[in-house]
View 1 (cartoon, rainbow, N blue to C red):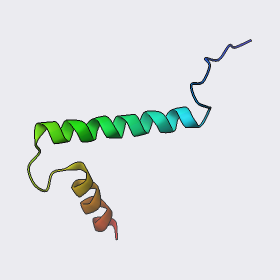
View 2 (tube, rainbow, N blue to C red):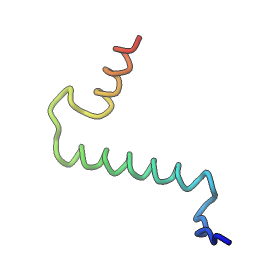
View 3 (cartoon, rainbow, N blue to C red):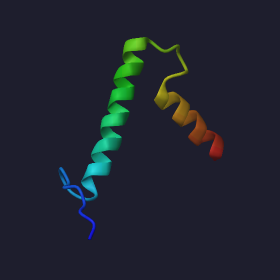
View 4 (cartoon, one colour):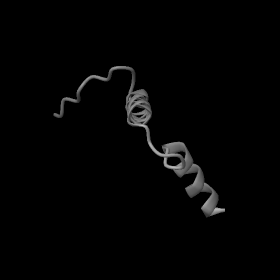
Length: 53
């Protein structure tokens, strides 16, 4: 029988929490490093999204 690790918040909440923490940490990293204009994560995602349309 397989023993699964306990969840912190829940089966579906834990992965969402991990994604949110990862995105937040990258956002803080970007703010700290001072990326050039037009190369921020949200701008690149927006550009990619607009290209799909």
